[in-house]
Amino acid sequence: MKQQNIEKKLRAMEAELTAMSESAEDSQKPVQLDQQSVGRLSRMDAMQGQAMAQANEQRRQLLLKQIKAALVRLEKGEYGICIDCGEAISERRLEADPVAMVCIDCQAERERKP
Image (cartoon, rainbow, N blue to C red):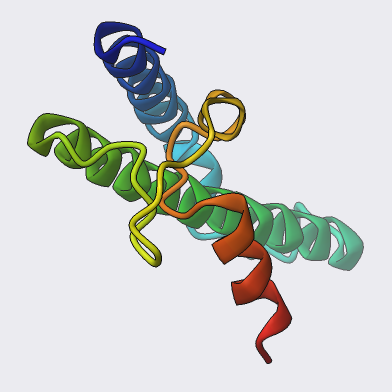
């Protein structure tokens, strides 16, 4: 994959996640607990929805950090090099996960460790 294509893909992912974060701000606001107008189950549903929205936002923020780190590696000429073993990360892996920092073998090793 060419560097321009990689950067374009990463920038598109970054823009999409940023837009999603901005549109999801309302669902993260504190739940209003007005007992007259909302039943107990409805409040619980609203609180659960808020918790899910917050968890989604945390995942988006983590992915945004990973994208920014990938862009820095790309700028430094280190993109596609495994940070654990120094070998090249396969193009297939990078196409599937453009923010991958480790090769498939090192990832498997990380997952085996408790």
